[in-house]
Image (cartoon, rainbow, N blue to C red; front, side):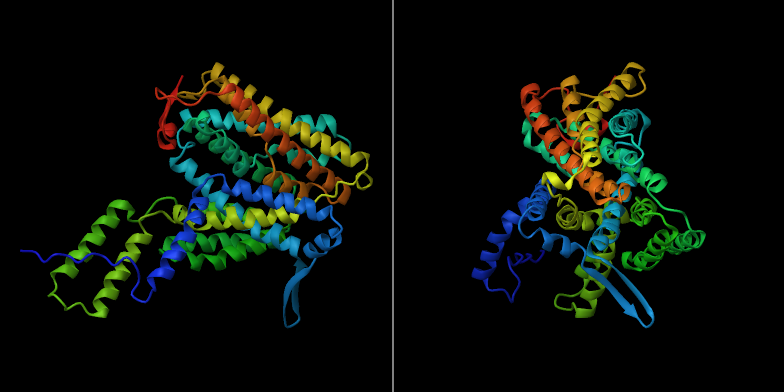
Length: 469
């Protein structure tokens, strides 16, 4: 007769139960907030509003002074000092692009982009949504001093876009969210290529060799079987320094390392079950009360390895880093870059031309490019439309894609060195993103009806494999 297992305690032995209940009660809203897909978009909106209000307040000088605060270190005769704005844009945003690189690789390996039949439609939509805004920008601001901003209206902000779809509630089927995610991934990849090819300065061979040394170090450690994620920080930093020294924007190093991160798990879920079961059986076979701390430590170490290796390194890092990126790095980036002075005297004619061209590119070029590309792909029978989606859904998709923000502001920083033109580009991005968001919400409520059960996918997982000609 087996000995009954005592119930698991509900709290740690050192915890005071009344205080623990209070902490758990206070943490529940935060847990729900972190699991809402649109929460990052809400934080971005708040950060942008604070930046705008601050930059146009009597304390505007303190806003500028803050982001120009020098940050760095000295080591003997060597010194490295940059502004706080540089730390955000060229340092912290590397982590953002690292996560983007891993998400791209994951989608290509086993996501929406893993099969040509499903990938053709979002690829075409993304390409159309990049080319049309760039051409419209050049049509409105193709003068020599302003034409460098053609890459600004090409990007879609996935956090804001998903937030808008979330506000539409049951009117948005899961298949539309999956299609938007795939489009945004390709869109990000296109923006990365544009940054690497067109917004990098003269390339230094020494820097490239240093970066190559870092990337080779990552590959060598993978081949040797190094599993500690922290061990890869050193070669990744070498790659970042090399890319920066080469004259290429350092965020590209984050993307490349992200693309190099393995997407296949060592043990997987089945291996986790087998290893944990074996360890528990071994522990259970010992005499009652004979469990020494050393035995428990050994079991816990083995279980911890099995837990860690149940997910691929890419999936594990995305899960760990995504909250920090979504609720920390991106809002800080918005706070540092969305502060545009709106007083009429600060922008010249060229800056207003840039603002207008960016706005037209995002609000008009994005939906037109997305819809024309999807229409051509379906007519040529190159791609397939997810089951349950109609032209009305695609119209909303095109409008939502016009929300630029994070990547658009980032490219604007690279495209313009003139403060006035940069302010115009930022103003165009903010105004266009707000306009596209409002149009998507209004037309979404007018055009879309609540999803009804039928052939449409009921979850994102179903949507990834549900297509029709």
